[in-house]
Length: 331
Ligand code: TYM
Image (cartoon, rainbow, N blue to C red; front, side):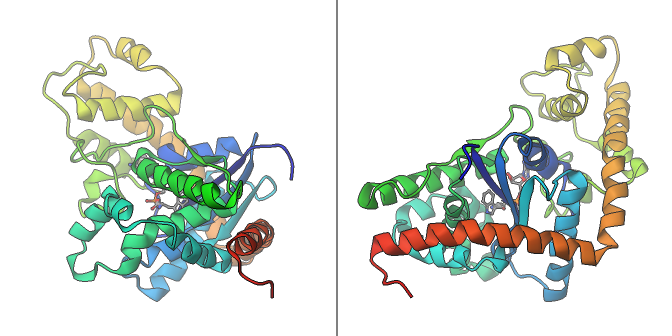
């Protein structure tokens, strides 16, 4: 093993990524490739905790892969793979379930939210979802897990499970840490800036997909909910404007203070137009690249097979070590 820090992260194939997924996680996935040993996965096993149409799921897995590549994941620098191709994820999940407590899983806010919105299908996997996520992370001995703020509680749970397991069996797992950027870790909904932006939002104006056309992006930013003060600065009770300032800052690399100065004496109309325009221009090359990649299924297959082969190599070694530690006899 080289001495680079190891990275693992995943995204559910449940639709086109939003700019929340992009600025909160994928942008870091891309930049981390230069420095670390990175493993990224399309979390298809996680996605079935909510009902999926099989044909749509197949399409979404491939489009999520193509989107990740279009955003800049390079198969010569990172392993990108499909979670269900590596059976070790399910196997380690089962082992770790015996080291995860009912009480701690009950406290997961995502479980509470998802079961609230899914009353007709509160299945067992929705509850044990964070244990599978822990298996994902621990299989690759990840030091760092690039995620948005909504995943922080899950990573803390993963740390606790790893520490508990190591406490019994010795130094088996690396203790992971979340990796997040201030101002990008939680991109808020454009229609209700007190809620995070989500691709499953029923209100189409709440989110911007990374493949959206310029007109649609500008229209959504213009329509976004803001306060009535009319002065552009990052402050209290200004969730909508704060969100747009953070999005703008992610793209042009200016600080919140610089942005306040740039728009001094100007109103929200000018600011929103500028944010919409720079965002659309920023996303355009991703859309062009995606359209080329999604038309080449052969190449996508090559990518996930290559990534899967490398991932299995790492995951199988970890699982073997775990099986040995807990007392399972070798095959
Ligand atoms: P998922 O598919 O919901 O989201 C993928 C990534 O995007 C981030 N994200 C956001 N960041 C900022 N602002 C937002 N509005 C926003 N919306 C989403 C998420 O935090 C996430 O990093 N359980 C995970 C997938 C997963 C995983 C893993 C992640 C499975 N196994 C192991 C890390 C490690 C999920 O549902 O992400």
